[in-house]
Amino acid sequence: MQWQFPTPVEHLDGYAWVKSRMSTDTPMAALEFDEEEWDAERILRHQQRYLDGGQTVLITAAQHIDSGTLVAFNELVVGEDRTRPTHQEDTLVLKEHRGHRLGMLVKCAGLKVWHEQIAPESPKAITYNAEENRPMLDINEAIGFVPIAYEGAWKKVLDA
Ligand SMILES: CC(C)(COP(=O)(O)OP(=O)(O)OC[C@H]1O[C@@H](n2cnc3c(N)ncnc32)[C@H](O)[C@@H]1OP(=O)(O)O)[C@@H](O)C(=O)NCCC(=O)NCCS
Image (tube, protein in one colour):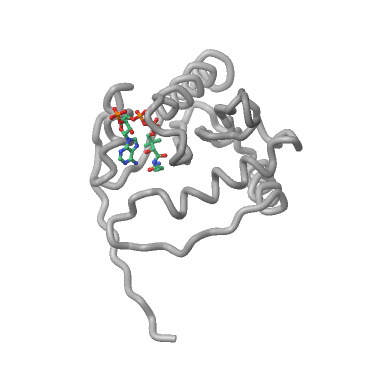
């Protein structure tokens, strides 16, 4: 399924749950971010910021038919000027549903509709991955993403 913002109300809770897993399931080198809590209200606030900034967002999700659960998702974003690059934001498959190529499927389905119908004038999509995130890099490389830059990150833990 695909939708542009705002998220249909029947998917808000499911989308909030899969999005919250980005903070627990994504390799972050040794940066170790805190677990994030997402609920329907936070999703709506998050979406409103995109809308207020004139951005276009497409969410592509896979739903497990038997349970109705959203199990995988992908997000694409472009600013008001659609001739600028697209940003490939979150992609995730719930742990218990991995190994069925759902990451590749939601990503490709999103990019296809994006390019054909939503932002055909956007010339490229940019994404970021931790170097140790081989499962995601495998998918990106198979789609045709190529490295253009490397970024370092430093973290300092402040005493309470
Ligand atoms: C990257 C991700 C979407 C891939 O999930 P997926 O589409 O189910 O993966 P695939 O079906 O292509 O899996 C291919 C193989 O890798 C394995 N695999 C997938 N993700 C894995 C992971 N995170 N760690 C170890 N093995 C993984 C699968 O079990 C499968 O093994 P098999 O070939 O022996 O069956 C998923 O790992 C994920 O959601 N990771 C956390 C979120 C994330 O890192 N997002 C990107 C942030 S920028």
